[in-house]
Length: 241
Image 1: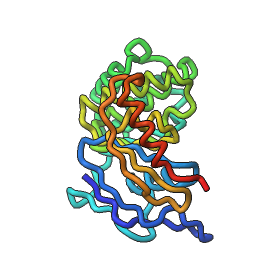
Image 2: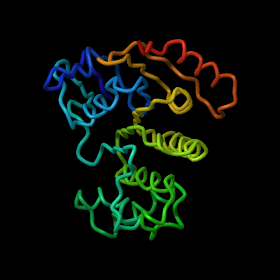
Image 3: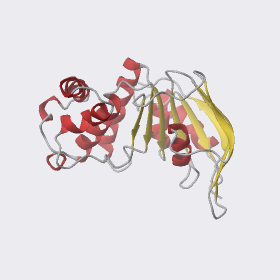
Image 4: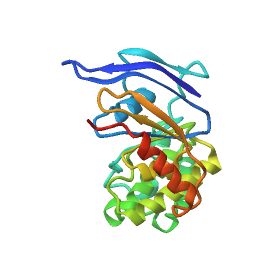
């Protein structure tokens, strides 16, 4: 789907966030970007989303251009929901902005919310939802458009561990069903090993790729294959020094 070729990003003032980053995203794959704080993971995600441009190098899309508006979904650490709108209206927002009729947008938003277990909370406003439920609404909003590419910037970092595990399970299930290409930024080796097919490890700033590891498919966090993959990440993880 996308080749990232020798990409660097320098900011005014001289901060070099990324240096000579290269890797590929296969269509329908699930990739985790893993590295220490400040290594440029979120910067890289913004470049892929088209929200920023590299200072050097290039992003080469297989189709010749990035996905059209509405075909890239993005979820942040903060769900960023409209406080005055209910769950269905929040999930329908990108569809409405793309000009889809209200009834059709609401129907697609409702379907996405139901897939994430929120069928009984369609009319609930954000203040009535738990942190995990608000994140489910944010995921539904990103998935309602049927994106070709889903970009996730540490969406589960602020959640308690049981809720985080349930959302990881839901995300894996939905990705397997839709085969949407997913890129997940995370600080968690365990999250990366469990969710992703490929883990791209980035060194401390300036971020550069130090390893690209293939993960086994994991149905359980207790199986030996999962523990083996976590150990592989630990051994390959860049030294924070």
